[in-house]
Image (cartoon, rainbow, N blue to C red; front, side, top):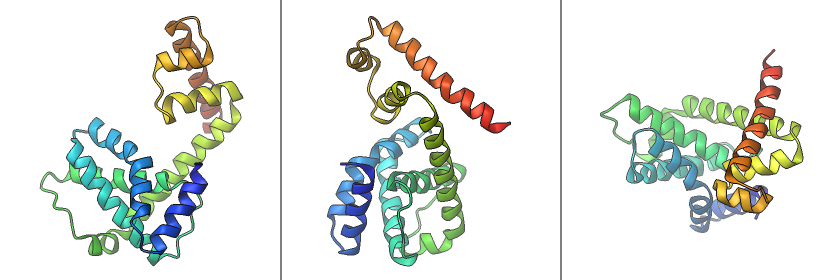
Amino acid sequence: MDKRTTNTLAIEDFRKDSNVAFAILYQKYFVYTKKFVLNNNGNLEDAEDIFQDALIILYEKLYADNFKAYTCLANYLSGISKNLWLKKLRNKEFLTETSENYYLNHQEEINAAIENERDYWDKLNDYMNAISSHCKNLIQDIFMNNKNIEEIQSKYKYSSKHNAQNQKYKCVEQIRKIKDKDNF
């Protein structure tokens, strides 16, 4: 199922007040929040709490703003989740506000985080579209599909892990060069 299909199904389910949307989004996108929280001094319970709050905020946003998905819902959820977690880290005595009030009280901050996340993903998408198709596939497998180096070596028929690592480095360098050129 591609991202647009997931977006469409989830949004339609939310609007029907069905719990299926929560399950779809949790299954497909929780891994991003989990990875971010675990890499930033959190635990699994923290990641689950943050993601639940992000889903509720997204749900409220769908109704409040006549929401249109211009990009993957993962970007919105990641932006909201990162914002919530960073806020919690800044304030050690963080108390999660009730979901009904959180979006209203932090609307500008959440919208800014979503826009920053969207800008980031749009730029990354532009960079990905500017590299070779082989590198694009390799980068997607490694960073978005979370394939390990052994899986990459097997799929792309590299003779060793070292060769797979070298190719990964070359592909990342393609993106870095395009990014550097874009910044000038």
